[in-house]
Image 1 (cartoon, rainbow, N blue to C red):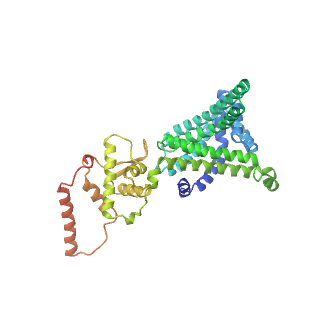
Image 2: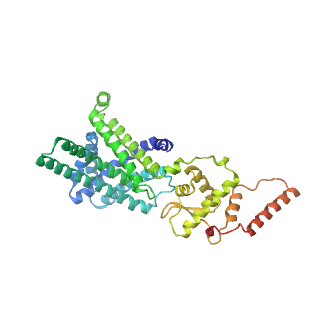
Image 3: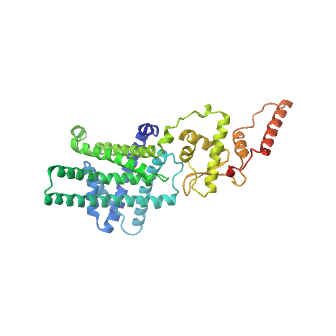
Length: 401
């Protein structure tokens, strides 16, 4: 199912787009990271960590690091410093904004963060992710060194020594698991279930780490590329590795999404046109009641996913009905503080017939059918039915249902 969603969301194409954005943003983003690292005195350590994370791409990354340091040097002092900071911030926000858009599309979230939230959230996410990489790497080195000494001092049996050695080999995976899980939790503009984010982070992180180990061990195609491209051989290899990395990241996001909404995604997805008019009205009313009650309780706006989960409908058909309610001015789409849908009318007077009438009147009603007594009589009949329905015992406030 994750693979099906991966294909549906065209993640291969999105990975290519992220590869391009990464190429455009990697130097300014690295420059910002080095600027912060230099202020705290661990610039050299950060350089070592980056080279280890991009193992197999040392030639390209070394050039990127050189360009980043040069960019920092050129933006020192006065107006250039201000312009440089603005440029670095813009590159970071643009890069992460595109990541958020793709993650939002995967999680069916309509609407991204507001600009002020982008600035604050993206900087916080970038700094937190950087600190996670640095400190998890430090912890890995510390634990590895400590356990190796522990094994030598105690002269452990061979079987236990092998078990501990296996544990040491697992430790490098932890950094990738943590970073991937962190991204899946905080980059989408919604609250992602921590277990779903962890599942995607562990699976995708493991695939990423194994792919990197395989690449380092076998160096697939290096000799061929060297023969064709000469000194430029590192560039196509780096592009291939970058695209593969983003593909794995997006596949992990799909795993997280499917893990979180497995029951909803398994629901049958009927065609809207094949649903009876009566059933359409019932579905619209149930959605409206759900939204009204959530609003009355002061809870967060509903989303297509939360409605689908509540009504046991598929995500796709639920999205169609949500659009119908927005077009008929029963619901209103909001983007802050969280994206979703809220009632577009006063819930103290929103009734069953308000929803039904709005749905029936949606669309064009200016077709010319002739000016006949028959048409007038039919219109009067429909108006009489509507008036009678409003006076019937079935007419009630949505919030009281």
